[in-house]
Image 1 (cartoon, rainbow, N blue to C red):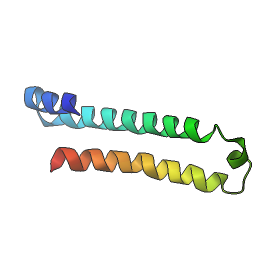
Image 2 (cartoon, one colour; image 1 turned 120 degrees about the vertical axis):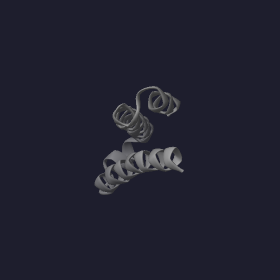
Image 3 (cartoon, rainbow, N blue to C red; image 1 turned 180 degrees about the horizontal axis):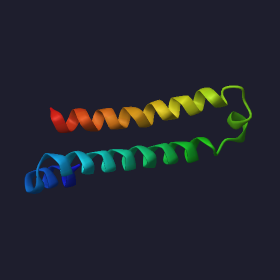
Image 4 (spheres, rainbow, N blue to C red; image 1 turned 45 degrees about the horizontal axis):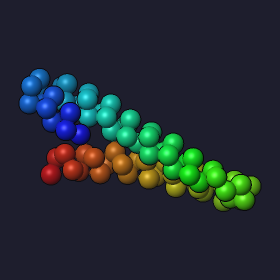
Length: 75
């Protein structure tokens, strides 16, 4: 996120929003893959009927990462 602030100071608003989108999506994907790998260690959960619910939960956590990044940058 520090990179996006520096880009905003040097280049203005449009490159800031592009870099913010890139960095936020990269952080969300990293979080999603890390959580999925940690949860996939247990084989009993992957066979349970709650597998779809777990995937939706992971997507919600990754989406909240983007929202929290926006909140921290703007306020």
